[in-house]
Length: 305
Length: 259
Image 1: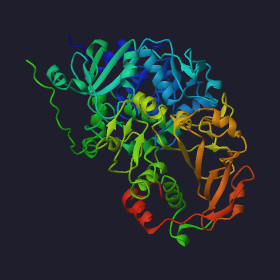
Image 2 (image 1 turned 60 degrees about the horizontal axis):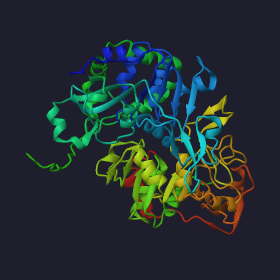
Image 3 (image 1 turned 120 degrees about the vertical axis):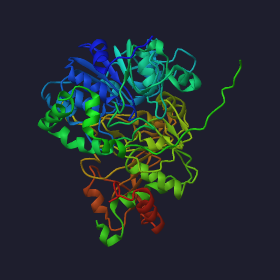
Image 4 (image 1 turned 90 degrees about the vertical axis):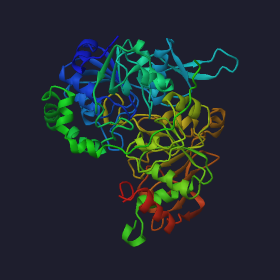
């Protein structure tokens, strides 16, 4: 059964005011196109989850879609700060932002617990750190087995909606990713509803030829959105490079609330869709971001008929 | 402190060279972005040819063909030994004790190598909201050696941290031994003024060498406590011609991190 939808319909139907939303992807495959559509539809009161909030959450939080942020590293990687987020945390400007923070391993294991239907997940971290002091959801616990080891436990994270971007998916939602895997698989299996956004929609036979590359089967996917260049300025391995210049330029936009508002007006509110964004960015930019080829070798799965 | 013109290298270049030498003979290193990335790539070409570069994004054995701006650059993936989920990387590689050395930095460090990357000021109403832990808290606990590289100033080398994100030494070596962690607290700190180790008896940061042209008074003026100084305080060997060639021609030809 085809689950193919437009971004507008997928977000309108599956992302609701007040939801807990995860747009995952560690540097790689961050779905900016979905974030922009959430801004465009003026969703409100969201709890946004991500290990690394990145520029996409700076845009979304700057646009006022969120009341709370759950995270483990807050910044513009390699550049500096997310100023719209910082304004809300440091000065409640224009309104407060509730935060709940973990370490990377803690966040990953929250998704693992959510995906595996576990009540908590034990890790060896947080010892002698102040993080559990400011986040009472991170609790110390003794192993019930002989060594009585002290661990910390983190609670499951079960987003109402997880949005993952992938290189390719079938119309039914079978999804394949290569390059950095982040914790998209864990975040998707943990969620109640899943939107897959992809660079290409492919025939089922393409997936079946290389099943080891599948991270999600269609049964856990609610909608499939075809959105080429949907990660920009993040990247899709083998399709387009990370637009580092954009991340550098974001610093000055993010610092100035008026510049941020103008950017949102020009690049989000003023456009109907991500296709218009792609066109407006211009062919020259996409040409500049196109990588050369480095294809994998093929493996033999064997024919057993 | 002299400038580049006089000495023939920049502050960052001597930090990179001095830091790379602390990786002599290491096998598996957790790499951060920025200076640590150049340090590890320099070490791989000089003192640690066997060095496997591990990135928290989920890459083991990276061979980046360009200088990555972010910790998740696509060039880390192409040609690497393994790409893993972040769960595997943190659970099977880091938490299980496979990582020999890792780089950390921070907005604040104290004399026992505890690090703050979370807030300046009060947590609930911070003066400056910093990035937070990322993987630093668990890296500090599990990496067998933690190497710190950061610029030195009164506001960053402080008597008391505003927030302890990542644990270092406790100041009580018996307590530290009883922790049972793979990590044993930071083993070295390299700044723009000198290099430090940690005293085995007290776990306290100890000045080992001053960079050429730097005085003990320069160091005192840029830290929030009276530094412990090694009896045989020496001078940091300046970067060699080969180290400078590698940094300038191969690792950071555009001088993003080194000038």
